[in-house]
Length: 271
Ligand SMILES: Nc1nc(=O)c2c([nH]1)NC[C@@H]1CN(c3ccc(C(=O)N[C@@H](CCC(=O)O)C(=O)O)cc3)CN21
Ligand SMILES: CC(C)C(=O)C(=O)O
Ligand SMILES: [Mg+2]
Image (cartoon, rainbow, N blue to C red; front, side, top):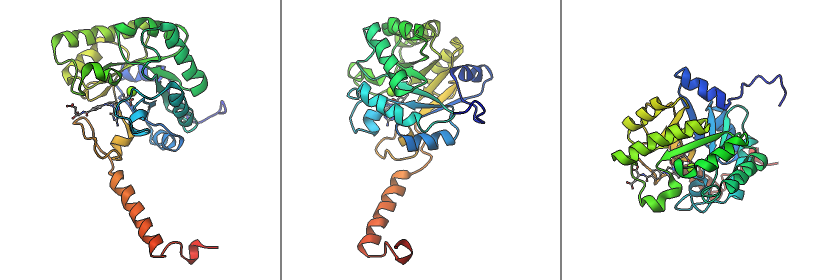
């Protein structure tokens, strides 16, 4: 990329300024080169290589099985397709919890081998030392609070989190802690809109919501969900912008018909 490039790249500072200027931040996931190119061309501010790749790429029930090597591979593919957006990669389950040295090692691998611009990890107080170590190494960290899917076996359900006072208070204090630790943003997943509003007003780093109402500083969705490729998944927070499942299965069945009937290829499509 030349220094004279026309494209203005988004940085963590850009996101901070957007919150200050009350300009909403947009984030979508991508896991591959071709999708990342389209999502970047569509103008999102940030692209997340989510560990939701475990679900939508690999077909697992939860995000737990995906490995750091697999997340690094997805990140490498995405980075090659992105010119403008800030590229954030999830550290997967088991690569940062409990051991700050291991957390730093995982984050360094994601930056160095994956080519991410920043990493995201789930949790607050419990992973304080891991966050401190990663931030101190010069790596931008995005927090993730509320419904943290890597803890699904502790939660037992994907229902809204922090409806009760104790969990709501912990979420606000975790938000403040993440800001103090130097995180550049925090994802808030499936919590009451009123709590997300309070959290967003309590900190100066941007909040990026999914199922957390309109008062977050930004929004994130899983690409496959918002383009309607993930047919069975219809949580209340999801808005579908396309029905690609029908479009693609329709195109495939038309192709099957055309080949079976010897309509494809025709003379113009032959040499
Ligand atoms: N494709 C996909 N989209 C996502 O948004 C996503 C992932 N995968 N994987 C990681 C996490 C998990 N998330 C989830 C997972 C399940 C629900 C869900 O099923 N919610 C339902 C029912 C919850 C219940 O009552 O048990 C809902 O109606 O909101 C929501 C978010 C968000 N993330
Ligand atoms: C849903 C978003 C925030 C995420 O963490 C993921 O896609 O893995
Ligand atoms: Mg994730």
